[in-house]
Image (cartoon, rainbow, N blue to C red):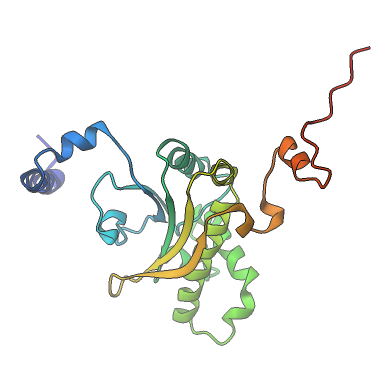
Length: 233
């Protein structure tokens, strides 16, 4: 017997599964045999922002990673592993970084009140604020939070594009675009931040990563091979 507190969840699950099977009898059989989403969603862990429902997509149509304030950190191997699997194995065509207005993590990052372990995570958002601090002059707290939600998404889009995972996909000609969106809790609408990156040439030169052969290939002399190692004496 399930714990009493879980009984409603199991009942809801049964109704959901039965309704879906009534509409599409082979849905779960097909889903169990294949996972082929076009989208990777990197979003906030906030319970009010469910990826599938917001985009009107069914299970199997979107691969999802969520954390507090939709942050992409280059030392977060959990997030990087999700990106790598989505890009290299599932061959997603779109990575969608989605923040939301009224984000508790972003709001907390604007404060100086300690909250424990999460303070270290929110440092990443404080850095975004610091880089754009001049934009926050004369904004009230609500406006400041909304702006930082948007700027945080833009920053995390950059971080996704700066990974060797995404850049290697672009090098091999794999179609892949990274997008930035923000979701409004007040009306349920997604907003495009007009941040869409589809190629190495669209990111700053300093973040473009090449192996030795690729570096030599890009030189004016167009040398096509690495220098040979010296013969052992």
